[in-house]
Image (tube, rainbow over all chains, first blue to last red; front, side, top):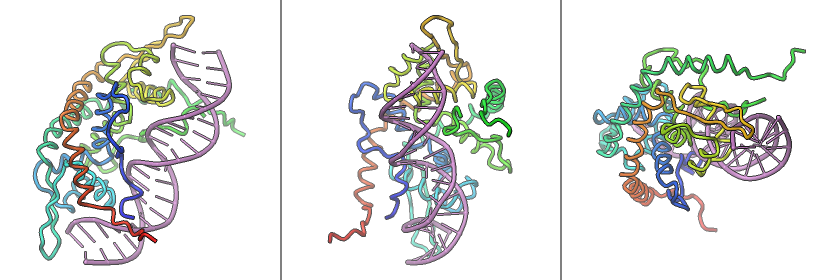
Length: 142
Length: 142
DNA sequence: CGGGATCCGTACCGATACTG
DNA sequence: CAGTATCGGTACGGATCCCG
């Protein structure tokens, strides 16, 4: 199979059976597509213009080839990215964010800046929480 | 153990060993905290004011008790939510978004609206992609 | 260069049952 | 009411090897 093990966070219909919480479910959809571990980085990189596969690999840095390919394909599938293959001798593939994705890009930047601003506060909150809420290890030392 | 199986997307240090892609990594941090399946819904609900546990359960609807508790705890740990316990006979616990989380709230709404606007486009893109890219099943029919 | 396929660990998430 | 503990499924993500 091709991508049978990683079908990402695809839902069969993308609809709530009830419809009551349709809004929240939509948010989930959006974040499920974008909330992947690497989606944001790729989306941001591809929003500034056509980016090559290898370039993406360098820009995102921590990403593996596999995840890059997978995320790329999912993003393309959702119409957030366009894949352009140049029929040259060394294969040259470029990814470009669609207008739809560019709209999202603004929110992404906002999110990014928010994270940058509060990164320390979050770490601090975490540390203090962990200090006040020990794991209560039942593992008595011998 | 308490929450040993689900330590969520916590990183040991929250720092890049290199520092080169610190920005993208920060985005990941943010989305890892917020990108949970239910974080957004809870965050949104808690941003409008103090919300009780049960109320949250109803507002988010699809969430299980377990995930509600877990997400709540993680959010609280990161300093995005404040937990207030009223020492009454029937326990009354209220969660409130911190100012930091409220800043994020705006971005969340933007994301939500984006998702609502393009939900159909995404579904369409998906359908057409799947149509053009069959799974190429090697399962020959008998 | 730009992927695809496979192996495999782990994180996430849900269902259920029990508690103060 | 507001959790906590345990079981188990599955999606996610990484490493490695192979291919046009």
